Image 1: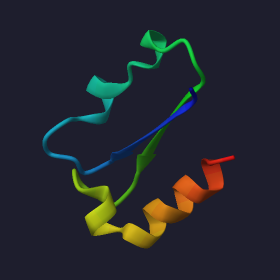
Image 2 (image 1 turned 30 degrees about the vertical axis):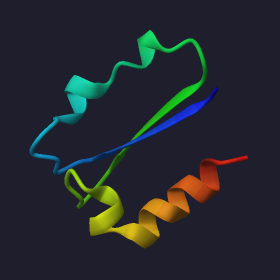
Image 3 (image 1 turned 90 degrees about the vertical axis):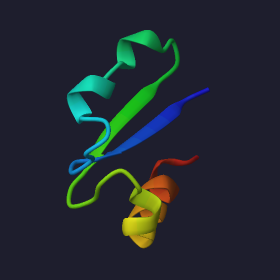
Image 4 (image 1 turned 120 degrees about the horizontal axis):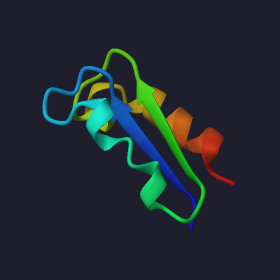
Length: 58
C-alpha cells in the first residue's frame, strides 16, 4: 500500500530528519515536509493538507 507521509516543518515534537525512514517501507513512500505548520498539520492548515492528500491519492 503506498504511503504519503506529511510532516510539519515547524514540528516541535518530531523533527523531520528523525522521521525520514522511507528505507523501512517496501511500498512506495512519499515524504513531504510542509512549510509553516507544526505537529497538527490538519488543524493548522486543513485546506493545504487536504489539497496535498487529494493531489497524491489515486
